[in-house]
Length: 450
Image (cartoon, rainbow, N blue to C red; front, side):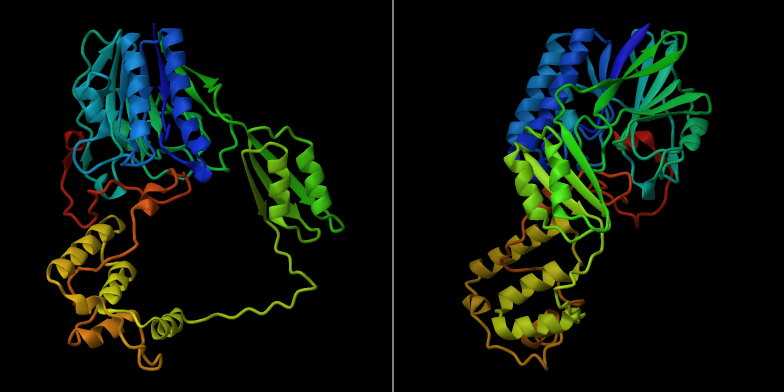
């Protein structure tokens, strides 16, 4: 009999609600799972991807992770893992560094045999590169009686799936007894072609839509594969207050429902539906915080017009707004270049900051002071877009023709760093940086992703 803990989607480093306490919660949840693995003396702690929330974890999060992995190593509990979409980097992965330090094993096409189970790995692969993927896993060693595939992605038959599980199982040279998956934060299990396909769920709630208790799977390989569920004891409480108002009810009823709950150190999510009078979310959130809540959020799902308010709605042309703002600001040539770089969308988000910094250095080293001088204000009737304004200064060059250079900008990588964890309802907006959907389609070996 071989027992392992199957976890994933720990999203270490996610500062949810911009609260340092929440950032610490994600690391603490991973520590709890590791402590459980040591206490239960399992054969391994298996991680199905998204160990980190993004590709650039902070130093404190890295130090905390290394400390936990060292604790596992010292207790002779192997840490086996694959790379998820949130943490995937262009070249070497954090998991490779941990492996070099003797703290982890990155699973791949070659089996890692623990007791009588052969474990294989399949990192997250973008949809654009799956069609010609060859599932060429190495043969199962004779010493192994079972085989399990650890992977990260949204697999069928679960909701919002975009990866055909039957294709993986039918085209693989290995007959798997189980697929231990990450990416879907909701725990779930299904039987596909006589193979158990299971999600362990996330160890902390990465969004208010994740109402199920947080936990992980305990997987036992014996004559059969059995999967049981365990809660993460350290997970912070989320209190969900659902209020359906009748026509004559309002904020008093919402506050009454909030007072019915113990909110100490909890994240409180109040959802208002039904009819009733308009409410002020800030008043409800303040009440929750006064009663000890760490975070309080109110979602009013109703569409109510205030009868005492004269509502006027208009739809403005964004270009008109830009023209007006350009007229008021009198932007310099350098500032206009910045705007073009950020607004046109010709560069990937991750490359904007570098392009801006390069252009600033060029202008400063060239002592081009004129580029930073304020330009005269412009007549909004003659300026159609910021890019058009720039073309008047650069000899008629349009935004589409111009090189991808820019001047100094306040644009930072915070937007990328603050990306929310992958949601099962979302598209593949968090694919690794090396994804190029326009690359020619060739048969791809699993080894290419290791």
